[in-house]
Length: 539
Ligand SMILES: Nc1ncnc2c1ncn2[C@@H]1O[C@H](COP(=O)(O)OP(=O)(O)O)[C@@H](O)[C@H]1O
Ligand SMILES: C=C(OP(=O)(O)O)C(=O)O
Ligand SMILES: [Mn+2]
Figure 1 (spheres, rainbow, N blue to C red):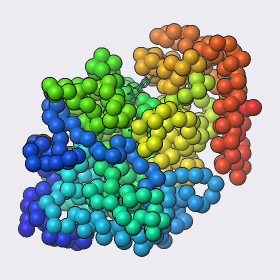
Figure 2 (cartoon, rainbow, N blue to C red):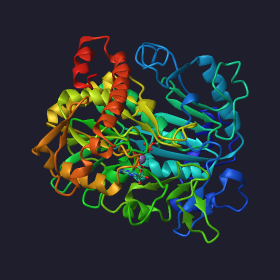
Figure 3 (tube, helix red, strand yellow):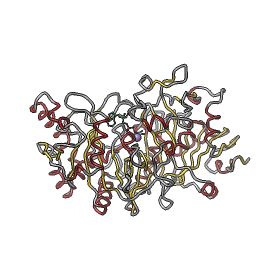
Figure 4 (cartoon, rainbow, N blue to C red):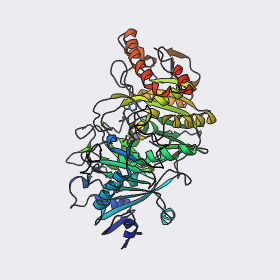
């Protein structure tokens, strides 16, 4: 049978048999109809909200599940991939045998066989020479909607010649009963095979596994070609000045890059090649907890028809209670990037970055709201990736938890962290880019730095104000903090002033410095790493 341009034979080639119907690359209106069909049950069914956006619940999983993530260890990956059982750095890349992979694949194809399926063909990566053509296969309409929002939507001509070079089989509705005998973490699985170029998903409905899963694949392929692959948002000012904002989940990438005065390139995943910075995605995935139109008007207004809300509480009248975290702290919305007014069109790309901002959410209140980094400090802090895991984005994380997440995205790295810093440093040197460390977390009195203050700080950085301002050196960390900024209250710039007294800050700073030193030991098995230690905090 041939429906909407894709044959069930194409699925049979993947091992999915007896497909009753293929809903191929449905448009948004079709997805709207599909995800609100009255006969849908459980998590499959979406609810229409007042704004026109559909709201869904993602089930048991309302965040990623890194402990259920596996990658097949074979000739392709054995010597290149950053494994969690090789070397001295812990990470989330657990090896999987070919045999277990095959068993998981059989489960997925069995689950997806004999069904009416959704297939979305989309690109990951804005540049034809480095993009992945990805085919997503799933049973659930809103999961198809999610990837349609998040990945780059091909035009008619691109679809006509679309040849998938990566396949995602999302069998969220099946689990793996054999997990114990196979030595896996649970009945849920998120598995990758770089040789077959395929991802398998079982047990978890959370769409972030597909989004961040493909990011992990780009993180493997691009640095090996000398292209930076970055967990960052990016935007470009009127003068063509490009800024990138690195940061772990919840540190402000999406919020701070969505700036009415600057064109958005993308909110989460980018590459940096010889031509400049380019988006991997075609949509944004914003946090909605405590969202207000006043504080984040562009994101608030992006939530309309075709946007997809996750795990929010919808009132009887169809309005959304963004303050309600009863399902999860990690409430979300995905929307096509065109829902933001000021974006780079038609392709999400721009020139080389001039400013590189590291967003960190320091739960200890030690780091200053903003500091200027030397090239050595840039490398040191990039490799350290100090921040906090915020509640909800990973299973089991319920309060801000200090962490060192290499390259501000350790969970998505598939190569050793130094491979990302090497490429980034080269790109930054060639572009003459400057780096800044911005703390969007807490100060010494336990208060989160306000979004208003952080926005003013970002504006100051982007206006070049930080580059020739008089600075004060923060002891222990040797960070250069501006003494004053035009639009920011001077009193907040020095973190010591937010503590009862300087001694209290000093004690906390020593504690954090010790954590930095211990964490960085894993990089000191060579001369380059040893040298970088001087750029970090000194005990
Ligand atoms: N000072 C601040 N800077 C940035 N975001 C802040 C700040 N204070 C509170 N927030 C909130 O923190 C969250 C940041 O989330 P988001 O921008 O989606 O992070 P990311 O894209 O890095 O995952 C938003 O909900 C935002 O409203
Ligand atoms: C989607 C995620 O990331 P971010 O919050 O950085 O957008 C995630 O970590 O699952
Ligand atoms: Mn984000």
